[in-house]
Image (cartoon, rainbow, N blue to C red):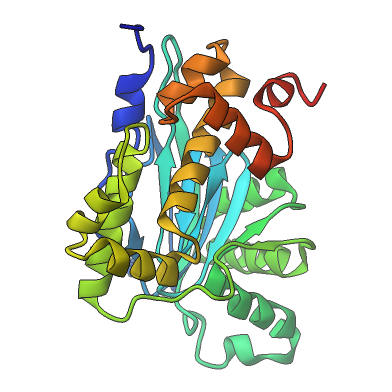
Length: 302
């Protein structure tokens, strides 16, 4: 049997319970918002929602981000803005042999009335009000000054409350004037209507993320959701805006892309490690969805 170098990491990489949790944000007594910095080997937040808006700056670490029906990779120096009650989480990459990784993020959480009920209604903040509206789907900023934003985040924990407030407002201003931000969840994203629905959906997503490298079937995931395969297919597509099989293939191809760029593993091994039954199917799906072959992708398009 072929020795698999990364099966254990692939099996445990998403070892986070995807049951949707409601997070209660506790602000410090002298602050209108909550701000903090996380440093550790990996991000370990559950799939969760909270009433507060949230700005997240990823300084170190890589992995996968899930926001509503959006799933993709995050990299160092990434900046995100999540609207109120928008489900989201980060999955850190597992470590390959001999690899070390530190995950670091800075984040600020605030309610829309944190600076008074009329503050965000000021004419001067019309541009930021559009940002608040757009954040309902989650936003990623592409063309921002990382060093400047990181410096402002470092001031959010200053002992001087005026310095903290000034930095917070300046962060908001910088987000509002930053061009080219990208919406994450689709405009057709359907929020769950009950705790029962959210639990069912997130048990399904959890099962997929834990087992995508194995030969997981629609019937198995439907069983976890306590639905028939046909009913589960409709349920999943309604909330995630793509079929179960498309979601699974995209997840496998995303992991394969990472391994193609970051390891010297043979392409055949990679295709099997991420869950494809054979190399020909992997090559066909990769070319169909990325418009480039795996070999050319690894070689930078050459």
